[in-house]
Image (cartoon, rainbow, N blue to C red):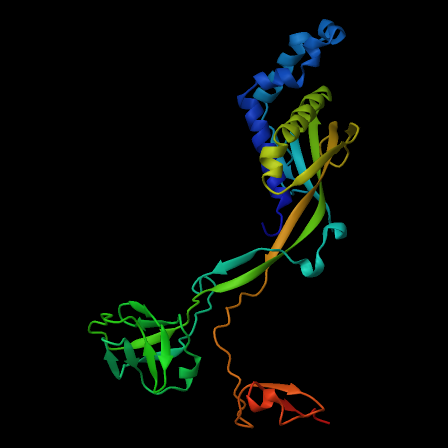
Amino acid sequence: MSIFSGDVIIKLAVELGLEDLKNNTWVVEDIFSDFIENPLLSQKYGMKEIQNAKDFILNNKINVFMAHRLDKEEFPCVTIAMGSSNEDKTLSTLGDQDIDVEEYDPEDIGKPIPWIISPFEIVNYDSSTGIVTIPKSDSFKYINEGMILVDVETGNAWVIKGKKTGNKILIDIDADLGDAQRFGIAPKYRGYRAKRERIISQESYSIGCHVHGDPSNLLFLFAFVKYALLRYREGLLEYNNFQLSSLNCSEMVKNGSFQAENVFSRFITLTGQVEESWIKTPFRKIEAIDMYDSETETTGIKIISQEMDVNSEEALNDLWVTIKDKP
């Protein structure tokens, strides 16, 4: 899950919820079950009011719009408006770190992996020893066990078991190189990895229920939308990364923000927690390190130190070299 598209997901949830209620009107009896189970309400309303609710959802196209649309108004309708989105610092981690590391194919991200040694013609191959002699190359020092000798034309490959002096590498004994003319040496790890980081945000959305004319129809529409949000909270909201949601409902108001007159509205403020994530720049696994210093023509690790002991065990064994700090 990357950046949460909450307005679209909630719009879809409301649309699916209303469509499901229209196709399963028996659920309407559960929504307004008080009309038949409550002794007082059953005497005044009963199944007749429930049938009115069924007729409302069956005979009306309930439009679901994003708020502030510029085309014509249609009623009854439900509007979805984006509210605030605030990162929850109580759930943050240092550096937004997460445990996920994703693998990427070089072709998918437009980052082809270069050859360790570009295609060449082998000098000699001894099948009895598995020794392949290759042309002299400055990159020979980077070859390590596990890298791949690749037939450039066919793509056939052989794992390098090691290397010897004299520009020689080892592959399996009796390996069949066929009539291949050109080979290249490819890295052992031929992909990219990228860390995924994340934050937790608290988001809110305003869901408006609007009818024109008879305000009693707003009671039906509001109940349908609220019931749908509650019934499908797990399957449509939590499944799509909108967690720990809660509903806050407003009173019914006569809404003068529409061009039409006698529009009545009631709003549901839906708040919840979402996880948003992003990938860092893809990187490759390090397979070889060159510590050669062209200026001093030396190799190895150099440690800056004010105290240089050229007779130390480390210096004598060439484990590292200490150098004076530059002024």
